Each structure stands twice: as C-alpha cells, then as structure tokens.
Length: 94
Image (cartoon, rainbow, N blue to C red; front, side, top):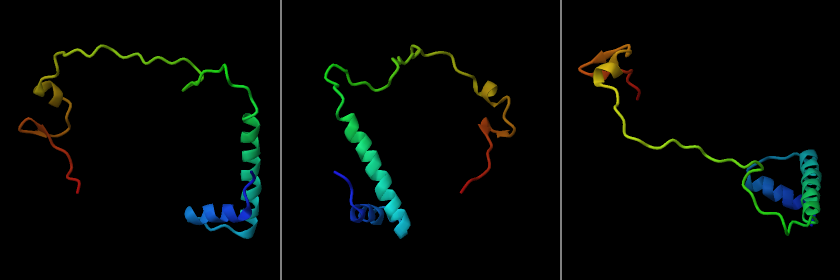
C-alpha cells in the first residue's frame, strides 16, 4: 500500500521536520519506491531459510577470567605526570 503525501507530511510533523512542497513530493516518491522493494522481498520463498543474526558465523572468543597479580601502587604511579600521597593528581573538572 503506497504512502500518501498527507502521511509523509504527518510523519514529518511528528519528527519535527519542515518539508517544502518539493521535498514532501520527493520523499513521498522515494518512500513508496522503498516500500515497493520491500513488497518484492515478501514474494521470496523463505520457508527453508533459518533466521540469522549475521551473514557470517561469528564466535566470540573470550579468555578465561582468572585472578592474577595486579600492579603495586608504586608501579602504577611510576609513569604518572603528577602524584601526591599515593594518588594521581588530575585537573579539576566541574
């Protein structure tokens, strides 16, 4: 079912878009051509096609979460440009 110009103008109003007469006409034609393409996709036989999230089979590779030795306070502060009393000194941001 094609969109009417009034429907396109109503969507533009809801989206708070100001459309000129020419833009409204252009968007009506463009949106209708997109909807025609989607209707063509409905003609395909997809009964034996499994739904998928991605076209490639992707497996996440996570490392095992192991507790390890962390940095000591002194090692963490070694490269700090400014430090005081075992803490990083950073600019105040308000």
